Length: 455
Ligand SMILES: *Cc1c(COP(=O)(O)O)cnc(C)c1O
Image (cartoon, rainbow, N blue to C red; front, side, top):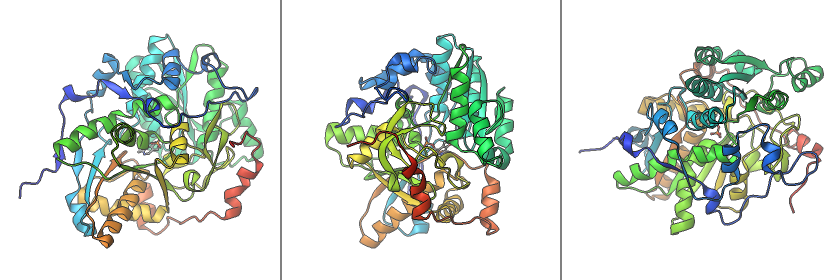
């Protein structure tokens, strides 16, 4: 039998425009609010942190936004990324479902993150910015932005969540190779960091805390701006190159997905793979189900509240309308560092509220179990974050088997796990623990919240 396993596009087929789902959403997102005045933020409020072009993209309602030639040129290093049919994984699961995956681990940093790091560094460069600050969890975003800043000649300061800084030393080395300065967050370099350390000198850190530190640094220095690797509208839009390529590749495969899956930290790789398909739902009446897979230990989509909340722990960012566990929620130090975030992007939150997407939560052990099964059949060792998407695929594929229906499932393999082998070691030696959040732990931070509610 002549089975096509890998579907490739040529360099010419790298998308020329990003897809902006804000043009097609049935209900627009609510505006972000100024943390002080509680009024909608304007471009001038965001100007100290972001270059104007990104601020424009953040609020744009244009359906298609041109990708600059300079950005497409850098994309050529790894794009278009391959799309695979997972025949052996299907066989192992004994499912009638057809499983496809888009592999973003082929980028220099090993994940989907350079898809937005490159345009962000580019627009900052064009507007004369000399230095960027950012946070990183597991180190994937920090390494992606290090790569991009190095390419465009911008200095970079990275605040890396302490637990990851200690668990993932090689991500640190990678960032240094690309010329970045990396600090273990909370640091004593910022007021935000000092405040957290005063409350808990052994704080494992969190993405929320690291964001506070990076934002504070940028806000206090005129020549410095800030860059975020997920959550914001423009970030999710840059990631739509994933889904736009996947639509073409599925066409070549002669197939179309019933279900599209992405793991969920702040929404960027999930939005990247699913938004172009949701656009077809909205404009052409297609019926693709989009599933976001999050960790049970940080279940903002499945157990959080839809309300205004800060993007960071200290409360320096605008208030964003989102599903949140409370900005002071510090998730357990699970190995999927990139998913340890209390909130979600505004677009994804609105879509979930409107029941246009679905969310499912998975425990760490079932994720690694799915990830190892995948590695033993398809070869690629997935990032711990990506194993959440695989766990969701397993669930849907087994459901299809039970029901005896043939489903076509497409998921985004957001990155490889070659810097995460200590997590796999922990799994094999039985040291990886299951953490079950109690109702009390879940609601403690939400109860404390005094940010505006919605409805
Ligand atoms: C950062 C990261 C994620 C989570 O972030 P999203 O913005 O939700 O995509 C998932 N997978 C990998 C490999 C990552 O690096």
